[in-house]
Amino acid sequence: HSAWPGLIEAYRDRLPVEPDWKVITLLEGGTPLIAARHLSELTGCEVYLKVEGLNPTGSFKDRGMTMAVSNAVNQGKTAVLCASTGNTSASAAAYAARAGITCAVLIPEGKIALGKLAQAVMHGAKIIQVQGNFDDCLELARKATAEFSEIELVNSVNPARIEGQKTAAFEIVDVLGRAPDVHALPVGNAGNITAYWKGYDEYHSDGITDSRPRMLGVQAAGAAPLVTGQPIKNPETIATAIRIGSPASWDQAQAAKDSSGGQFRAATDEKLLEAYRLIAQREGVFVEPASAASVAGLLAARADGWISAGETVVCTVTGNGLKDPDTALAGMPTVQAIEVDPSAVARALDLG
Ligand code: F0G
Image (cartoon, rainbow, N blue to C red; front, side, top):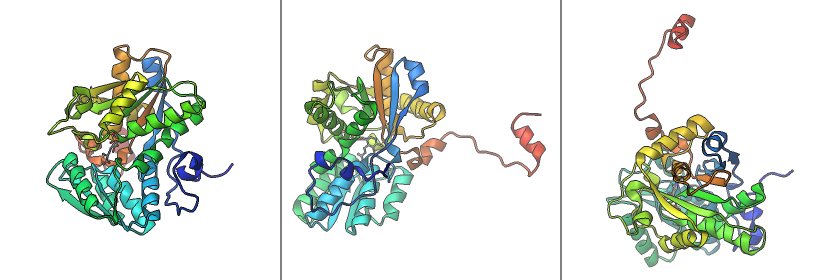
């Protein structure tokens, strides 16, 4: 039994990696696929959570970033740049630190979760706030990197990102021994749904699986361009990670949905927060609000019969709940301190 070597080593034969590459890794990937007992009971399905918040920087972005930053370094790039709602910037900052190159991040003003900002700061990224939303930041990042060839753009429009992220689908199949019937995940810029579908599709083409899942892409209702069919100018949602109005991988996401017999759906902030609490309180897994979209989508799709009882469903929960303490604590009553006295503990527990 040997230790997990990181996803590039684990899936080297399925990734566009040169033998002489210096690999930049934090041993990302190899995340748990946890059986979700409460959700399974609730839905009559066999439900699993792919817990991506257990990656080194707390989100699935690390899968893409080990590939993108390794690729950048081996091409002789000296800096990486990204637009981000927070997780991409945290991940890019960490991998750039490890590689010893510069990282700059463009973030939408006032709209990223506290933990993610702390990560980018600690890893020494150059943080640039933009008076605009994520879509504005990405447009800026594309223009800036087009002009300076020494800077690599590490958003999911970078093909290396998708290659790294497709390994999550491999891991799921490797554990289950087959493809699930449905794969549910949150969709923002639409890189991850593109990556999962690529992974499932490659295993299927190579005869490792005899089926592929229906892809269920879930967006926040205030930021659901793939559901409404057109870009949204001013996306709004409490799930800041997926507050995106013009997904870069629109066509690929559409293709994943269409070729898999899948579906896009929208979940209101209220439903997202309900699922967010349910995952924490009934499954013991603390995820960030955007991540709960996969579970909100499962519950809604089961309720209207798009998912049937008995089906196997994997929900990717994309980011760690610790990244966004503000949302977790919002509306919590302040906890009063008690005297250092056992009877005060008893009173606090309503035991007399
Ligand atoms: N979940 C979380 C926690 C995310 O951070 C993101 C995207 C998504 C889901 C959606 O994935 O964009 O591939 O469809 N976050 C990006 C960022 C935009 O900048 O961190 P997607």
